[in-house]
Image 1 (cartoon, rainbow, N blue to C red):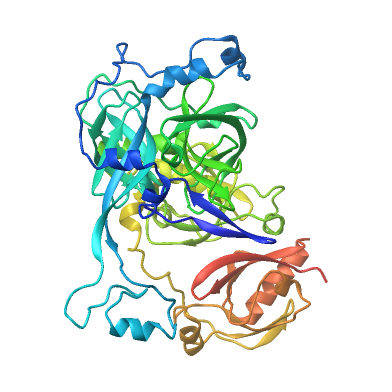
Image 2: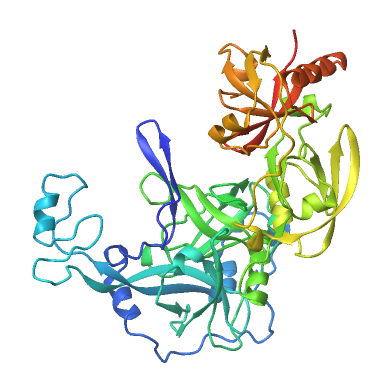
Length: 525
């Protein structure tokens, strides 16, 4: 199980972004005693789940409210229709049970109790009598999920089943079946399970891109171990990002609590448009800010897990950053649309001719709005296929063809950045920065390649635009105006060229600790 995502500080209280499943070690304090007793008894012979005779996903009954996408007089017909496909997920895992008092690290009592064999925060201790303190015990936790095929494929959150030794699925009519894990994806917190069954009622995915802020939605699940529950609300926001590179959350005010994790978020057509994953809360309970991973992300992950048992995301081989008004202006663009290439690794992009400083405007025929948009589209693109990429370089659009690699294979295998011949020259000052040549010795101290070309920032005027943009001592300027910089004179020449061209700012490539980023500095005199 996973602990809270992160903590957001707010005036007088700490606001926690909390995963909605029950923690494995705390379930016996929050779930009813009856649920824990039942979960430990194993499989049971129960009446079979109602068969879905037409072999089609469950859907909302036809109604005027459905046609108009407005709030109905009652959600009862919709709940009755889709609820047979929603399940409770009971997991069992073995955890170490510490015994004896626990003290914070550094407590004056810690040494005393460690000498007597009590477990301390850094792990169990061996007693003077040779017996290990703390006995393992079985812990139970609860979550939610939903059936997506009549032969028993079930979707839930990865954190619901992570670390579980046993997974039991409880259907609405009381039937229980043991599930196996087909595949998981930590990046989107999605897991695919399978039970042995036939003719199960199931639901289908809708197009989450069609969801509009203000649309009515229905959340079903197993909050706080209370069993099947329904709650309604609206789409509060779209495109929310929490902690992951592939985040595309639908925010909703439908009541979502711990135990709802992995449950479906339905639209008025009875289609799943999200998987309930997290809540924003000061106390762990619902305050009307819940997050569901968008179905268009989930469905792609599920297709890959079904086919391969793992994800296979596309990989372009670039480091990108978002466009800003300053960067857009320095490139002569009217808007900050697109994603800027900050660095290019050995891989698909470099082989296709993409360079640092290019702006990616389109990918596979789709307009790129920002860097997050590009990350999502590349991840969902098929590995090994040719994709057309439109870039902006030196004010001109170019179209390149890229054969995508696979991210999972590339991660951890990217070598050092490419290097260029070492330049030399004089020290100097410009744009509020004191600069000096980059020597191999300085490069080694700054964590960049000893063969790296550029100039080093030795001081920054606190009142300068460079200071306002975060440029600091030790930064290495390697490009100016998308041209390589080997000396201070190179930088000054690029600044003069930009001024003569009527530009108000110049785009600099800066490396800090080897990591590249672009900064647009004002050159107005």
